[in-house]
Each structure stands twice: as structure tokens, then as C-alpha cells.
Length: 292
Image (cartoon, rainbow, N blue to C red; front, side):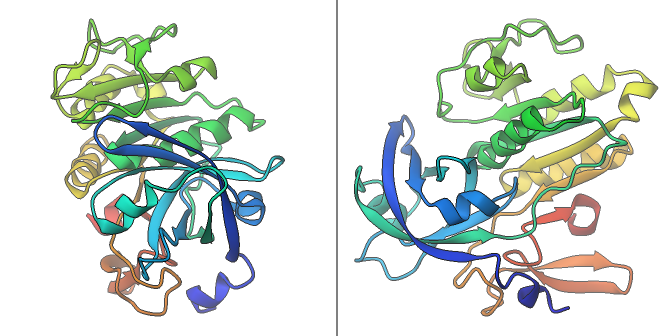
């Protein structure tokens, strides 16, 4: 079946109502919308296409960070990088905006790999939070480890983790409090000298920890990542050299987000040779080895 046709009936257009918008240093915002149709179908790795303001004709794609299907809300983290998101940051509680979603193929977990390693960089953090929360409610005994990196202040107040993680370099104790409260281990990395964070790239921190594992533990690892292209390229190298499976969520500019315009295509290796795939409906999640 044509991939874009496969998504028919699963992408909804609805008027989202702003429930909350919180600002953080570095022009970062967390937006919570009442959007029950999207919330009911969203999976970790999927995204939505939002109308930022009546003055901005083009929608913007934003990764979904959290959902509550029972209460009917979806939450996004974004950073202002252009005029559209600058307008979005002005929306307040009670405002409405058009939301189209959920869109895209999500991350896929494999029961034979019960120790997922989640790596998020910058605005690539949201899908990792969504995936971590889904593991929290999954019936399988998953043992996730989350690594996050940012060169600007994190969109939360890091705190020393209450969860011990053997193999993490000494002094690296900063964590995301929300994950810690869920009983999910996390560690942070930055080159900006933030207290308790690893001084360097998040992929280097993940590499050091992975190398500390014995063969049995490493055989149970699968990597999931989202972030800037250089970070994803480094993650793909890490997974290749340590012989670990890895899924990456790509971030590309897109116009329609439903497969019609082909403005977000990337080259992917397939069994039949190189092929051009649309990040919106063929992705955004791909096998790392196929893309890098």
C-alpha cells in the first residue's frame, strides 16, 4: 500500500485549545493543548502540524512530548527559531489553533531488547520523554536509560538523581526530575558547564556508559535517538561500532506533512538500493544504518 494512503483515517484535524504555555530560558516553551483525537492515537515518535497564528499561513511540525488520552491533551516542547514559532509563543490559555495529527511512523520496541537507551538532544528531547513515559505503563519489565544533551539551559530544572547508575562518570548526577519521579534513570550532558552534567556531547556520555556494560547487558540494548543531524550521525556511528540496533527520528522542514509535497525527502538505503523517502509519512523514525 502507498505509505501516504496507509495514514488515512489516523490523522485528524481539530481545533486545539491552549490549556497552558510555559516559558523557559533560551526561548523554549512547553505548550499543552486540548486535542482529544490526536491524544487518543499519538505514539512515541509521532508529531503534529500546528497553525501558529492566523497571520502565519504555513503550519509548523512539532514533536509530541507527552499525551494524556483520558484527559485529551497533548504537549509539545519547542524553541523559537523563526517567525512562526515566535507567533506561537504568544498564544495564551483559551486560545485555539488548528492541529493536524498525529503524523508519522513511531518508534518500535522489541521485547528481546529490554534495555532501551534513549538519547535526546535539544528539541529532540520530546520524543524521548514520550517514549520513556510509554515504557512506564508498559506491562513488560523494561529497563530504560535516558541521556539528554543541551547547550542552552534545559527546559526543566535539573536535579541530582536519586537513581544510582553504575558506569556513569563520577560527578555526573544531574537528571530530569520528571523521569526520576517515574523511576527512570536519566543523565544530562552539556558543553556549557552546567552543574552535575557531563562536560561534552551527549553521545560521548552514552558511549562511555555503554562501554561499561558486560556482553550480556549490551546484547539487550537498542538505541532510540532524536536531535540535530550531527548528534544523530554520531549516534549512528556509536551504534555501528558497538554493533547495536538503533532507530532515529529525523527532523526536516516540511510544508504539507502528509506526503503530498515531497519537500522533506531524504535518501535511505533499502534492500533494492537507495530510495528517496518522505520524513513525514515514511518516517520520521528510520533505522539509523539506513540513513547514515
